[in-house]
Image (cartoon, rainbow, N blue to C red; front, side, top):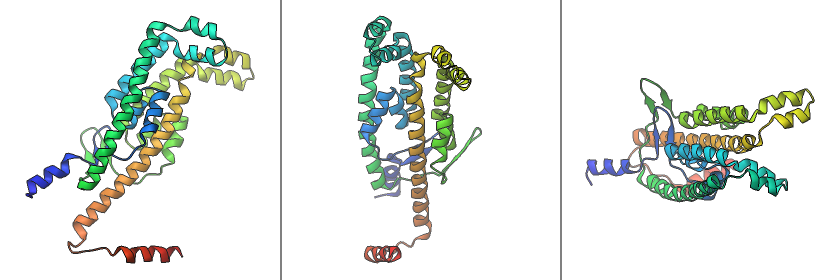
Length: 270
């Protein structure tokens, strides 16, 4: 095999890619977890996969249809036993459109996860190269070992900020913008002020259930997904370092005795 053919083969399925605005990588994911987050809020599953255009489009469509159709308000009335009020506030025109978007998001994120898992296995077998640094006129993005707990803690208090820690700028600023809009429309912070003053009835009356029901999904997704990406990027950093050391400092005739390595590891544990 020629050097050109070998180069093309290795670049066919890259393990990871660093760009100005984000870091994307292939790694094994549970397709049911991705589908579950798509059910929590359509578009989240695609953000997990790094499919930004599709994910952000589905999120915007979900918020618009949910708001116009009063889906969250109808869900709240159903859970509290007010089925008549639920039927009154629900707009069937948006409800049926919402169901199609909801179903498609779950199916497509599951299918995409299965396909990308296959590409990840092929990328590992092909020993695909990883460029650990990206510099241009706007940003500097690089692979590095990061603390996986900083990202979820930051995301809990300000959803979206945890992604900025790992340089997923598109996801970070999108979730941050969504958080600002939802908290403003739900009036949750004004309710906190009333709660601190002991005015529980006013706090309950001022909040908007249609918007406030978005908040648990946003917080939970930001905490979970930002943590997973820190862990996976740390693993990608280790893979790149290992490949660099092997290619530049390991002799071509070097062989690892797996039995001796296993005995050494066992002896160190004992």
